[in-house]
Each structure stands twice: as structure tokens, then as C-alpha cells.
Length: 214
Image 1 (cartoon, one colour):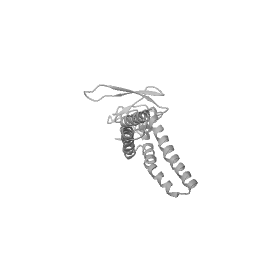
Image 2 (cartoon, one colour):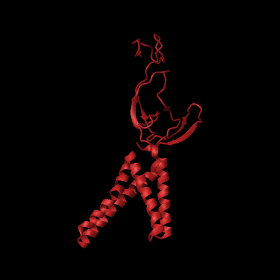
Image 3 (cartoon, helix red, strand yellow):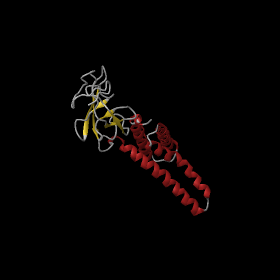
Image 4 (cartoon, one colour):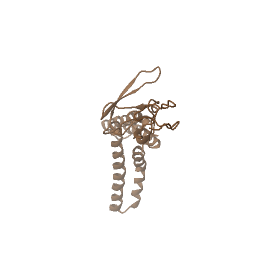
């Protein structure tokens, strides 16, 4: 095995170069890297980062025996899960279980995406049908009001910060709108309370997932 530092040939299986002491290179291998927090994982079975939920990307790396490991490197002890130990100086150790077969932390996000698309396109189709039935094409203009909802679903799907901010605006608008309808409008109190609870739930959910957006 040839040393990359001094080009000396070493015996097979050697860990360090007998001439200069440099760690001998290993063969290149694939690792998974989080593009958001730059944490690296040995196992290619891990698809999403357990720290922030970002989808991991494949990276080819070459390491030397005895040399320092990659930054924030984590090696899973089991095939299908890993125990992550992230220790900062003066802080407590934090353990997190990594499930490699699915991204369990964003199920609510996928539900929101589906509801946003279904509500916006379904409402536009309904207004279009109504406009055709009564012969007034101006009714289809009402469908423009649902464009922000569709954009919210798209932004959440892409994990973009603008999508998260737009979603917050829609939820806050729904929250205050429900309160105003209960106080001054004709909305039934039970229905208004349910809408307020739903809006608060989504605000808390996406607030906890804010690190997943960039």
C-alpha cells in the first residue's frame, strides 16, 4: 500500500507509513451527509437527518487509518437504527433514535401539503363549475383567493422558509378570522372554537419543525 505523503510502498494491512508515520488511506466509501447541519453518517440506510429532519445526500470520502474522523461523524451501532450522542462542552448528552426506513417527524407536514392542494384546486374547480352553470365567468376570479393556500403547500413540500412564513400568515389569519366571526359574525361558537384549536395546533407543529426549512 502506497503512502500518499511520501509515496513509500508499505506492506499490505499496514496502518501507518513506515517511513513518515502518515496514516495510510482507506478505500473510498459512501457516507450520508446532512446538507443543513453537515452531520455525517456511516450507514447509507439512514435517509433523513435525526437532528433536523433534512433529507441526506450521498458523499464519497477517503479516510486514513488512525487519522481524525469526519466532522460531527456518527456511526450507527445497528443496521436499522442508531443512537446518536451529540455532546457539547459543558452541556448534557442528548440521545436520539434514528429510524432509517421513514421520516417519522414530518407526517403532519405531508398531511398539510395534501390538504393545501386539495382545498385550493378543489375550491377553484367548484367555482369554475358554478361559473359555467350560471354563465358568469367572473365567479372564477374568486378562485384566485386560494392561490396562497396552494403556494403554502408547495413551499412546505420544498422545505422553504418562504413556504413556512406564508403558512404562518394563513394560520394567524384563520385564527383571528375565527375569533372575529365568533364575536361579531354569525359563526356558531362550537365551530369557531374547533377552527381556533386547529389553527393553534398547526402553528405549534410548524413552529417545532422550523429548523427543517431553509
